[in-house]
Image (cartoon, rainbow, N blue to C red; front, side):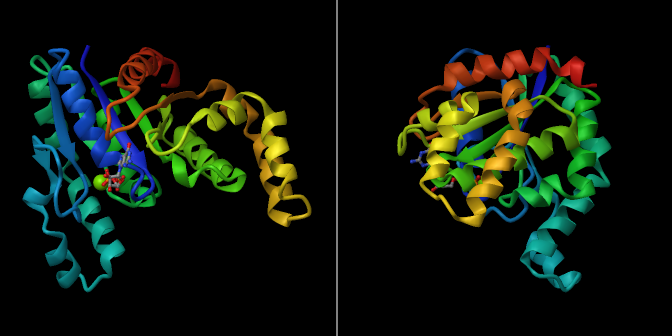
Amino acid sequence: MTIACLVLGMAGSGKTTLVQRLASHLSSKDECTYLVNLDPAVTQVPYEPNVDIRDTLNYKDVQVEFQLGPNGAILTALNLFATRIDQLVELLESREEQVDTFVVDTPGQVEVFTWSSSGSIIAESIASSFPTVLLYVVDTPRATKPLTFVSNMIYACSIMYRMQLPLVVVWNKKDLVSTEFAQRWLSDFDTFDEAMQQLEGDYSSNLARSMALAMEEFYRVVSCCSISAVTGEGMDELWSGIQTAANEFATFR
Ligand code: GDP
Ligand code: MG
């Protein structure tokens, strides 16, 4: 069964680094990956993309032609790409026999992909042909405060329900910071609440506390892995998480 992984996450969370790591990890297991870059604005990618949005769309030209700022140009480039998504899906289908996993890298800013109709169209088109898993990459060093933690989780939650695809939260950069706090906060509200106590009196702490309570159902169902895309730590665990999620794909449809 050929599966597709869509790699999403905030700018700088490590999506592109993870795509490269996943490809090298899987190739060491004799698994064949096929890599798609959908970030029109990236200057260098550390992997060899099989399909690259930059081959057909020059985002600087889009910016000039439509008189847009950088974010508008990225979004417009993605919209233009989405109008030809059937061609990408046909191409992927023609590679299905040789390929084990398609890995799709997305634009730096997560909202370009997740809150635009082109992002949904692209995700939906790929998911209509292959079991598809969303990898939501978190910049863990930037999520160690209760409020940034819960904001990230709300974002992941809204993406999962919006796209209706299985999602794995990938706590990245564990070489820089221990990810244990995340596992603790997800599984035990009291430990999160204790961390909140330290912000006592702060309006945002009340907000974060009620949001965390509302998120309990999501915390219960979502799967998580801790990795370092740079060192490769945790990749076996991530790969089995992806396979489990792919097997649950049908229940999301
Ligand atoms: P993207 O914008 O989500 O595609 O993020 P990139 O993959 O371009 O990574 C952004 C920055 O984070 C780069 O400087 C990476 O080298 C760094 N980075 C990514 N993953 C890790 C990691 O696991 N550990 C460390 N220390 N740095 C990382
Ligand atoms: Mg990137």
